[in-house]
Image 1 (cartoon, rainbow, N blue to C red):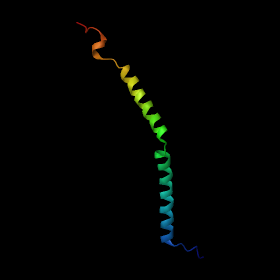
Image 2 (cartoon, rainbow, N blue to C red; image 1 turned 60 degrees about the horizontal axis):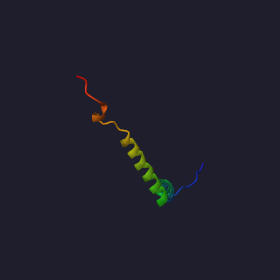
Image 3 (cartoon, one colour; image 1 turned 45 degrees about the horizontal axis):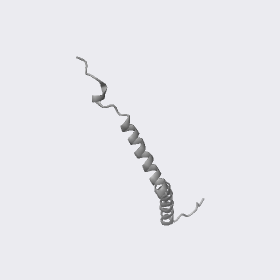
Image 4 (cartoon, rainbow, N blue to C red; image 1 turned 90 degrees about the vertical axis):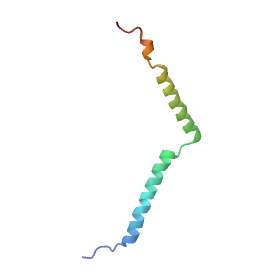
Length: 67
């Protein structure tokens, strides 16, 4: 009943290599955008903030305070 002999050092290195590759793939999806895509997202974000602020009600615009 002998099992497969596993070199623990090579197993550890393989596990670390797989983890680095997974992290690299995640970073490519997170940060791997073109300049045009980043500018588009920035413009869309600025526009939504501007629209939100433009629809904000100021306390002075609500009319006279009840007596």
